[in-house]
Image (cartoon, rainbow, N blue to C red):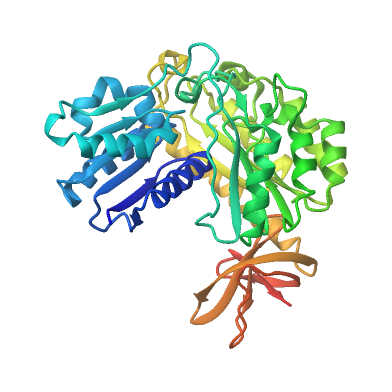
Amino acid sequence: MKKAALHNLGCKVNAYETEAMEELLKKDGFEIVSFDDIADVYVINTCSVTNIADRKSRQMIHKCKKLNPDACVVAAGCYVQNFGKDLADELGADIIIGNNKKNDLVYRIHEYFSDLDKQDGPILDYIDINEGQVSYENMIIEKDSEHTRAFVKVQDGCNQFCSYCIIPFARGRIRSRDIDDVIKEITMLAKNGYKEVVITGIHLSSYGSGTDYDLADLLEAVAKVDGVERIRLGSLEPQIVTEDFARRVSALDKMCPHFHLSLQSGCDTVLKRMNRKYTIKEYTEGVEILRRYFDDPAITTDIIVGFPGETEEEFDITAQYVKDIKFYELHVFAFSKRAGTKAATMPGQLTNAIKKERSAKLISIGDETTEHYRQAHIGKELDVLFEEKIEIDNEEYFIGFSKEYIKCAVKAKPDVDLANEIKKVKAVSLINDNQYLLVEI
């Protein structure tokens, strides 16, 4: 039996696709082993969201050949979709698979091993993802390495073309998965014991564009699946938050009150240069709508600091907005110049030192707002989906997440296994440098 190892880089969509490729290999008879083990086949699902992601993708490809020079190395995903053809010889991969061709994985591996003596350079498997009407590549998983929650991809592609972002070029135009296909997969995952599903996509807010259904329709259908007790959403654009959307989604008891609304900057002039399609006023209105329909929902976001031309005043406006809006969590990124995007050639490129300084300031503000949100839940009752047992300060705890995605911990009891159990708990205090809410059942 041949052995295969897989490694994922990047977003939750990539992670889903890596899980799907793993299942393709299992069904073909491969034994899946750790990426640090000696394997016959290594699969790297690459990322290209930043220059660092590009570099990590190359490093992982080269690492495979060091682990086993005779192995078949497969590079798939966004980095190779953008640059693989030009770098094919120097990448060192034996098979290079672009996006929307990942279902070809097993076929290409068999092609490689059946024709070893005639190999003249890597096998390339691509489509021009930005030309014509590209269909949705339907992949499916039955299990997820997360064990308690399953990520389900329902959408691919992006039409936004934010000035800093390479992903529309790597993923192509928006396309959506049929609701019936999504429900079939989630039904199977529920039968396999998953109590929470996380709905993901490259530009999830555009789900259903060009069809007679939308994201709210999908969520209402998912809520009817027996066994699914929680529905969580991946990253959303603020424009999707309308009164109608919030009304429909808040009516679903299974919906987690946790919304990741992508912000990127708290300053209108920077948003305009980024080619974001909303104003701060519109973003704020979306947050206010969610807070009207949900009881203290967790609002999380992404912010890019050091965008070309960002002045100290523009950064200060963003910092103040972050304080005012009271996010639960911030994900802060320093601007990364991506060749082929408009932002890469914009004037006013900032130094790494300025980006680092601004990142630190914003992260510090984010840490304060996160702690405040967690503290506000002390004394409240929460529903927690427990995941695993860990050690904190030499004591054993079961940890898990509330519906708001607050990390919670309860002291473990002998012979009591809480993994994949949802329990109603009461929050008592913060522990472990305020990283966890200590709860009691």
